[in-house]
Image 1 (cartoon, rainbow, N blue to C red):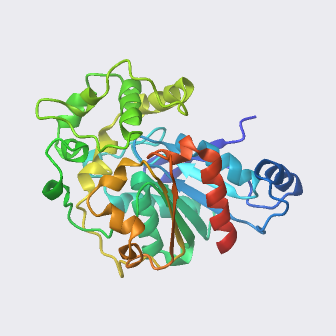
Image 2 (image 1 turned 30 degrees about the horizontal axis):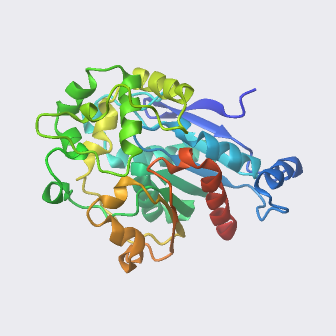
Length: 334
């Protein structure tokens, strides 16, 4: 039997796909397996514990497969879901009006539907944003936040156009119709393939004036060694179902959304894991938010660690290292 089980949670008129594994209860056999696998001899965890994973783009619930199995083996209940309009979740009736507020509301509904009163949130790429924002809006529901690939950036108007050229991929994907035409030349599997290759590099994807983002990858470029053809087929099938319409709206076309926050400071314990070769480190201002004192201005209880050879998909590239880091953080705050 597949250790990861699947269900749907009703959120209004939408059915959102949820994947989960583990019970959140400590069982001696699970911890024995964990101790052998990670060379731990005793577990610091006790009682019901839950971790909810928030994916990025072009990811999906499946991008957390390694972490979910490891955390379940360590006695956690591990939950991941496809955002509205992604993967197996229903698309919203008006994808071009989907907002960050919708994602935050969906997360709250899922926690309530699964009877999860308080959880750890783990967010990757743009999934870091709802993880941080949810901890600000609902601190009573969050034990701590782990993010990968993206630090906390207080909400505000997008500034990319001031510092990066017109061919910067986010600027291109914010332009209505531009990405649709670019992606539409290929099947979903090829689009995901190209983005995984591009985002695994250490340089920011930037196209020339007469070039589209998909043209930055030659057809014969191999996949990263840690990303299999089977993985690609899984992603491709999920995006064939959902398409990219909602994925372009959230995150790219909603970056300037105004959110009413009681306080922009993240007060729960937080842990940022960055790949040392992640292209995001070259975004304007990101180095200050990951390496400098400014990183703790808005996240005072922040720890930061770097995996030197890691890229933007560090949780898939180095799953055992990431699993260990996450479990160490959870041990401190459980």
